[in-house]
Image 1 (spheres, rainbow, N blue to C red):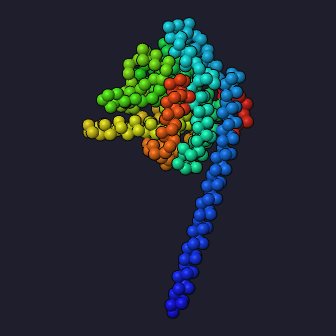
Image 2: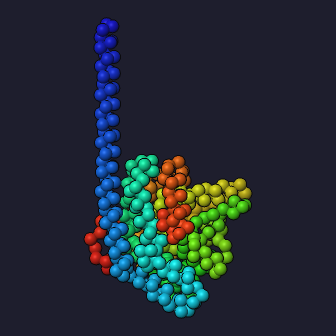
Image 3: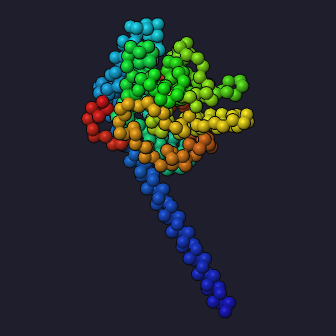
Length: 340
């Protein structure tokens, strides 16, 4: 009887060990497949970012050309704003913050694999950069820069891919935050900073600080519920935001919500509702990001946690980039005209 019991017990433990080995083997195999997928996505992202850079350099993006034209005309109308206008026009080149941020993110994900808590999160970031580098998406993203110049022209230059300023404000019941409104919230041009009382306000990077002379200070709590339409805030944020930038945005939201709650007030995210304002965006812009955990909110990045080394290390990298010039895809075989 005892022998049968011992044999049964031994069999149980052997079975448990075999099962454990099989589970471990499957997990290892899955992780290997994920790592291989990352390498394939990195190659595709390299191709897409390079292709986009060539399209920009060759003048094959419609909105990049429009941006150059608007900048030239606006400098004649408002020569005193020439330095700011020239800075905005950089987005029509490979030296603009919008393009350089993609290059920076791709370089980081290639050189710092250990910075991502899980292989899946690294894969998500590569996929997101690859998507953002498509010519049609990037062309749409440039509409914010074009429309910033259009609004600065006092109506002499029309907006592109968006409703008029007056129609948009009426439709959204939004407030006018002055020149550069489309950039507010976009980490390529500035960031939310806390003042001595703990209130978050928008702080511009570098030359963009000239916007301070053209409008009043913008506070997160007010902007959140009264912002107008912009491509970045309503369509591009999921792709043109790095994981650490999204973490920072979530932290600003959490602090503000807590502050409102302490005063007995409710507070909603500025992204809880898509604003009306686009007039003719590409299908790619209206298609949700295909990345899994990062875009859906299951990742630690989007939840506002900053436990990963990416959050601290990339913040230092982004800070350095911001102080100079804000340096922070589907496999494409289409012609450059796809961005027009």
